[in-house]
Each structure stands twice: as structure tokens, then as C-alpha cells.
Length: 93
Image 1 (cartoon, rainbow, N blue to C red):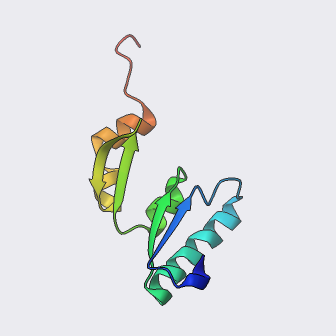
Image 2: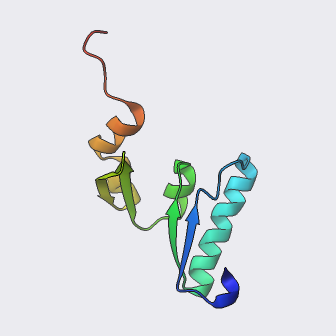
């Protein structure tokens, strides 16, 4: 993908199947690509450590609908994101 000198690198679940060390190395690689080559990275990823570690801006989808949009700090503190990823409490418990 890098041979064509892209302006945007699109990756779908690049951390799938990686162990924690490999995941950390992937994050560093993506940061290096972004910073050294000035390439934007569009990342579809469920591993939040990767997402939070490399992102300047995050859009969160839940069942195909956008529920949050902002910086990593804004997104991780958004009640809609917390409810979607951790679930909302059950009133019967």
C-alpha cells in the first residue's frame, strides 16, 4: 500500500489476531507512518488500546449509527460510548 505514496491508508481490523506485544508494535508503526510520511490513517478497529493510542480524532459507530465524534478524551468519556461498550445497568438487578 505504501508503494503508491498514498495520502490516506485505510485499514480494517489490523490488530485482529495479534498478541499484546504485536499490537503495541502495530500502534508504533502506524504512528511512524502518520508522522514520517504525513499520511492519514483511516482505522476500523475494535481494540480500543490501538484506537486510543494512535488517534487524533475518533468516530464511534454502534450498529451502523454514529454515536460519538471527537478527540480520544471526549469519546472515552462520552456516556453513549460507555453505554454501548459496557452496557447500561439493568433496573431489575
